[in-house]
Length: 590
Image (cartoon, rainbow, N blue to C red; front, side, top):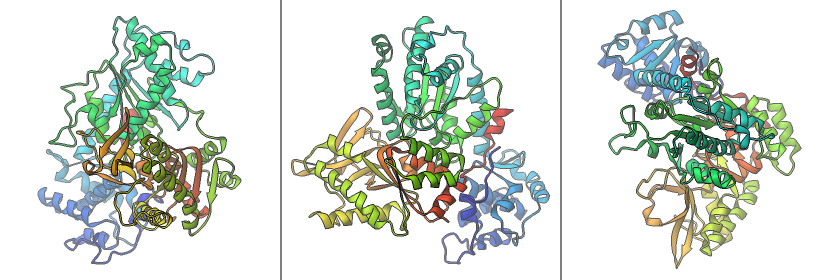
């Protein structure tokens, strides 16, 4: 079972100081326990309003049930699927509040009419759920176990043909994937996951021929457009290095977003054209960056997979989880690893980083702050630590030269060079706003560019403007997370974006949902990488600062990582776990 812990996101948001009556988080209509806990800053207006509405509709008079509902709302907003009632007082750590005892709180909730048909809530093993997430968690567990248990009687090709000596880890993965319906492939950046996937697909295509099926229908998918583009590029690069026979078997591979794979509908954002009654036609489905997949999206995916298909889920469970509710990949790894009949495949050896970046990522992942600080202090070609309270001077020395190179390529109209320059460096921030946020540093870079050139600071569009797409546009075939640059063409500006099939170009007036990307959030950086990455740590009491956040940021770098922040901020990040409350891993172990 995964539970929320004090000291991370939950503790920072729940601790707190009393709310001012003018604060947007204060609910003027709150009464009783809801009022007390809202005034203390433990729950917010949104939590109170949902609790009030549900108890009114269900004619539930017990204010302890209303308080429990408010904490479920709060948990879901923080990414959890449920809340463990007995643990809430310890997590919040405000003993002066009138907490119900664990026994009476549980008894009140268990006796509530809101748990009877049609149920709004479900209370199971001390975990309180909203009906939707309880159903989705049950469904995911059932479908995942059914896929994992599938053992189709098929011939197994010679694995050593594509995984010879020296590929021992990858060969072990292939042997697992060739013999079971579901494979979870984990590993940090640079451990060879894409190489393994490409060669495994070649073996699966060979296996299909041995079984008398000349065509293997393969789907490649990822949660975002940028991640799909990277998957497409990386897999194709590996396929191109295979033999002519294998390349012939794997012709026409195309990566897409999960939304597009499942068939997005205009009338709903949570249901798709492919589902249990209209399954996906593919024989093999590969999903990359699975750590970013929410519980709801995983439910929609596994119900749409045919029982005789193979599902390969690839990702790094130590990265940040989905922005929506759930920690599905981590739960799958924990739950399935505990079963004797299912194997989770893991790659451990990194081939991407210099030794120092790998050592830093490992120290962060295992929670060793002292080791992380030692690696940063040692520095070297691939590591830089900027320990300062005022990062402006240091960041200007890095950001302005990169922005000017980007501008030069854009003014010359060289879209390919502009895109290549864009991927040379990323400034990653935890927050969108505030002195450590993306908005602030985007504005700062534009001001610095104006000081260095004749570019007007107030212009929203300019040559060399780095772009981040923030919403899917299926008509233009551009997706949330796609990146690009504004370049000069015949006296006007055009947007050149890095699409899955190569650069694509549009008039800037056709792009509605884009923002400037001299800096980007660490959450948005998932599924992407850059040659050099600068990580700006937020204040150590930031609710977002966590081990998973720092690990995700550091592992976006291919060749160099620069950490800007103090030892205290670094220790705070490594110490905090962004753990979410779920029951999926327990269901998978049963």
